[in-house]
Structures are given as C-alpha cells and as structure tokens.
Length: 248
Image 1 (cartoon, rainbow, N blue to C red):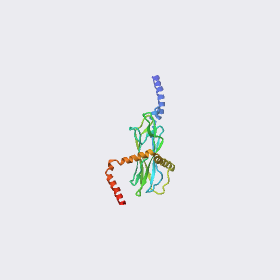
Image 2: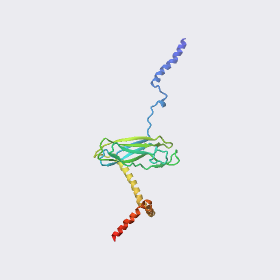
Image 3: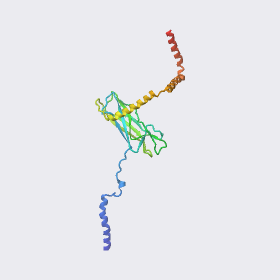
Image 4: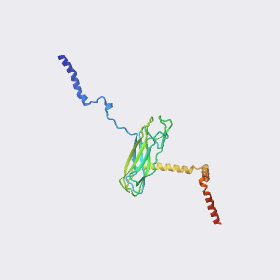
C-alpha cells in the first residue's frame, strides 16, 4: 500500500509543479493561431490635397486626389480595356451648392501585361493624381467641406480583388489670407496639364497638311448637300439677289 501511495505522489508532484507554468501561458504552443492579427493594409491609400488653407469667394482653385498604390498592386484605369474590369472613378462634391466642382481629369494610364489576362491592360501603378477644380460663389458660407467619392478595383499580377468604394472628406475654410499648401506638387501638376493641352493644340496647328485641308473643304462642301440645307437655298438666292438689285 505504501509503495502504491509513493508511486501516485511521484506522478502527481511533477504535474502540480507544471500547472502554474501552463496557467501563466495557457495558449503556449499555439502562438500562430492566437496571435492578434494585424489589420490588413488596403492596397490603395487615397489622400485629398488642397492648394491652400483658405479660399476666397468668387475664385476657383485646383484640388487633387492622390492615390498611392501599394507595391505589387495596380488598379484599373478610368477606361479599362476589358468590360469585366471595374474602372477607377472619382466624384467630387461639396457640402454647399455655393461651392461647385469642375470637370474631373484622370492621369494617363500605362499598358501592362498580366498573367490573368490575354492582352495588356490599361492600369495605374505607384502614385497617381486625379484633378478637379472647386469654385466658390459669393454666397458660400462655413461650415464647408469637399468630398471625393472613390471607386477602384485593385489587382495583383495573378487576380483582381473585390471593388472598393470610399469617401475622403476635407473641411474648407473661407478667407482671403490663405497660405499655400504643397506648392511644388500643384506646380508640377499644373505644368503637366498645361503641357498636355499645349501638345494637343500644337498637333492641331502643325498637323493639318494639304490633304487634311482638302478633306476639310470637301467635308464642308458635302454638308451643303444635306437635306437640312435644301430649304435655305431659296432664302440664300433671294438674299444675294436683293443685295445685287440694291447695288445697281
């Protein structure tokens, strides 16, 4: 009997000594399962950028939406080439009708080939800027805010994720003593936009050769033969005939 009691004590004592250690760390050995997971970082970090601290009524100002796209990801451009892909879209709005928003301008996309698509796709990578303008009428009163509603679909080289929608809002302060914010950024963006517009105008100025002028002339001549012009022919003849009679 004494031998049995001694044997039981020999078994129970090590278990009793080990119990506090297990109580202090009841999930030891399961760290991979119980570790607190970090919130997954979104593949796109949007930031609404204003040109200055205050805005004067009666003036217009540029506003930029900065999209920083995480390494290894891309987002579809505003005009993706595949119908199944969700385009990147941005809608700017103001909290007061006295603040109006101008046309939204998207950056140039890049063409890139991915493993999940047969043809190159039109995408944005790294950091891009989407521009608009905000105008303040004389009736604008605080509190004011501007909001950019962003929708995008992020993809890796292998597959695309579920489309995301998010709002970015910033308050707008009124005043004539506004101080500039990030002037270099707005200067670069303005220069890029102006350069693109100038290139388009130069192309129109310098790209009209003799054949293009001939085509323009023939197109105008063809427009005079459309049915809509027929009722005006007698009016035109009568006008010039009357003018000729008066000159005599």
